[in-house]
Length: 369
Image (cartoon, rainbow, N blue to C red; front, side, top):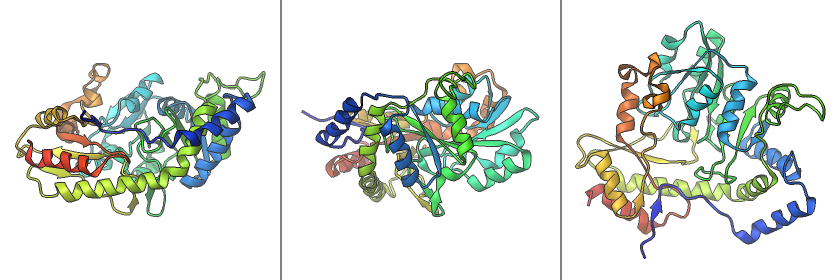
């Protein structure tokens, strides 16, 4: 029977290595609420990622919602229409107005050159995405934020372990938000984290993710239940033991795709970012008008051959019903994002992807058979 290949499959360490963690949880009788594995995992992640402070969450989306509350963001926030819906949804959850601007065609990240024109007296922050794990223009964004007194929260859902110019990409901005969803390079089934620069900010984050409790009888703010449990945290500790070899395998797959698809007429590959130690989170291709099929026809051809790619990110967030009334969704101002969304196709990318499947995928794309 032919195995169906999906765009991503979660890395799962050997089950027998996970059993001792579960046995310890049962022995501790501590399932959540800042248990020993939770504390150990936070510390281990800080060490691995090269950051000082990090707070674990039950999901990346709840972490985004909370990050906006931590910095007391209100009014308008400049962001990208080319992302997973959680980016903009987190703004609506906080009664914040998203202001969409176009993306850079080479990186698919927020076009920093368009930020200043979108700033109004109501703008309080910028919410860029490190799309596909490729760094946003952190220097220019930081300079603009400093000039106009804006906060910067990076949606770093794709950017686990990414280094830019020799240091963690997560150190940029006021806060960075990670996702540990099962589709990500590093996962805890579901999960996420906020990376912050100081202990005082981490304390406020920890209050907010636990209903606002500062102690047993004192509630400091209307917080939420965003805590990561011990099962997730222990799984993360086990995953962390394998993450370097996971990323190394993803790098090999990325290079093999580039070798086999380079020069295929009508297929464009995103350039590799400079000064970046990547995590190879995704492998997007752009299906240009001079290709032998449309993007959706190629998508269906792959599906018919038991290969399940994804159109990340299509449709644009700005085209969805809850955002259509915003002035910033005008198509003329988002032309690059619209074009990329209509052309993008992410090919399968996960550590267990075998060579014969890679060759099959590339043969289909090369010949559209």
